[in-house]
Length: 412
Image 1 (spheres, helix red, strand yellow):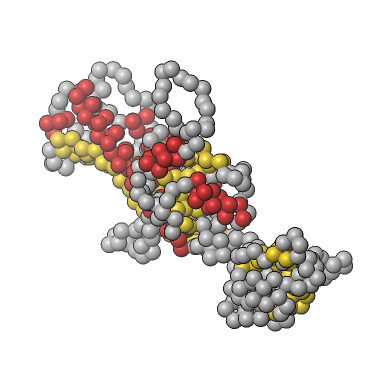
Image 2: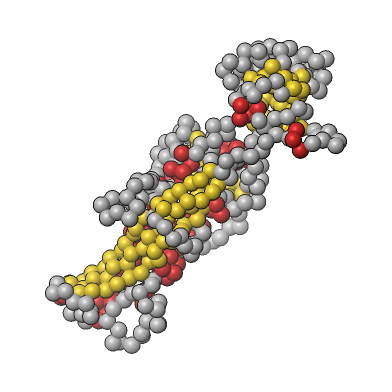
């Protein structure tokens, strides 16, 4: 039903364009116009049927193995051949697997080529025997630079003609099952009896002002919930516990990939290299450079980024405009990420998200109800009320290797 345009119209509500009480679509569209962060997340059109939502997230592909503390046979030696690993890492290898040190340089020979090691025997559930200097770059003599707890990249393994499937490593890994809880959000407008008795255009103006103010509040609360929320993990169906939705950063912190951490909680200085380093780690995790990554941060941080290379970038001069906005970050490995400023972001945080792997899910679509003075549901109060309420949660796929963040930046 369209909003009437005749002078008899004595109220204001953007959601009057909707049929009945459901205002979900109109409300989200209004929020998207005020928050690019909420807009780039998949719209909350997908529904879930429970207050606790569960989903499966695949683990990151295994590309490395890590030495253990007891690995004294390799530490500083150029000839010893037993590499000690965890049982889980040994299960990812087979005879023929090629390894190279990912933690430090191990130069050999005239041309300083890093040492390759080839697995030649699966010695036990926690050890493998390797050939040192597998490429024979230094006449079979390995490097002494290795340390017992170094990380080794699996370059691959040749497969013998006529080989049996049973010799391949067991690539099965249990799926990560994540869960999140729904959280209820509301917005409310109200008029006193005297306000409602004003002439219709004044009353409409008052409601319009309330609508704009409460929409901004609700928009900020949704964005804050999706970015910074945490789980109470209790009270499903209880009216005595505030049920909370877990946000993006909490998912990332709880699922840090130790071999390739994507949360930088030590760098305090904002700079191109620090952000680019996270994109390189995403690349090493197998992220596709064509994926639509976004950088979400504060307006102050975006302002600093917009000043980078100001002396090098030339743009078409506009006699009617002054100032400069940078909207895209380009990494050295090919990622292009839109830079989004949002008012809910804290000064120390810069978050890199892949929005196709982050999805708001609706449990109860937003709807509105009116009661009190001048309605069919009067209760004796000298007040008119309108309340909008909805309930939703957030699903984050691959939180340990598809998103990244800096969380210790000096506040600007």
